[in-house]
Image 1 (cartoon, rainbow, N blue to C red):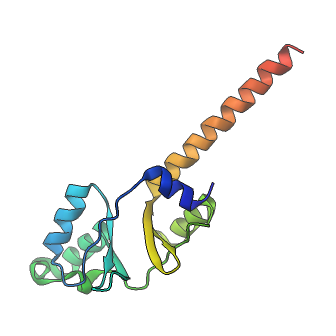
Image 2: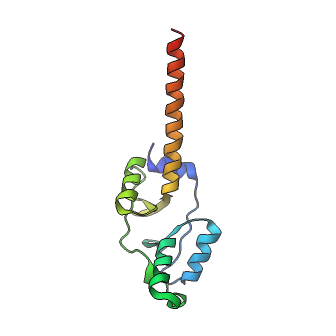
Image 3: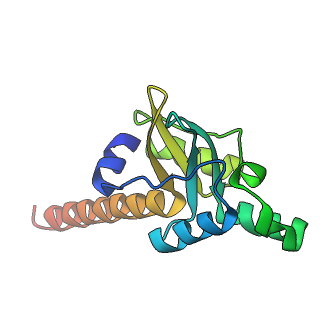
Length: 146
């Protein structure tokens, strides 16, 4: 299975924000969409960063009440690590673990194709593991009747 197939399975609609959006706007989008991070896209629709719940909490802890006047561009991560739809789930998990974050944008030909969370990848791995266990159980049962 590829990351692209996982995105197809998830059938997600990508919510994004803009660099000039307020932190309150982003917090509202994160809450209403039930997601933990948003790609930040410019006026051409190109991804220029990502902002996560962790970025907001960090900004609040460092800047306190000033957070009300901050914009996404002030706290977003600009140097975004991503994968492609052709990557394996194992590679995506490795990127998340290595860089210690929980959301991974998926880019295809320079365009944002989706965003994977560590939860998405763990659910897929759990499904694969359960399938493997069932195949092994069937093999053991079949071997008993030989």
